[in-house]
Image (cartoon, rainbow, N blue to C red; front, top):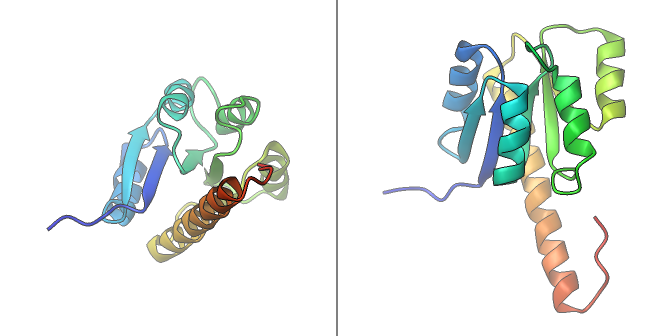
Length: 145
């Protein structure tokens, strides 16, 4: 018997072990798309419009901050929630991420139950927003994103 998935999540990290761990934490409830590359993350986000992106900050070629800025500057992807994943805990890093449009942070090493809670909370928020938008459309109201 298969379960209905709650949403689609794109996980971006250059460490295969992190990708496996996050996939194992979330795979029962969500459709998971993974990539190790920032450029590929931008492409996948545009093609799949996930409900949430878990994005590592420190990656080769293009940083998570650059990926986030690219996503937020694109009309198609600007409203996707992004949780940044970081091994550091610098105050400036966190402030920079929020300024660039991040929704939240997860620090490495992470606690699986905390990751699951943060993801569930944001996905629930996305589902509520969709329901409100649907009601607004049915009532002929203007929708603001």
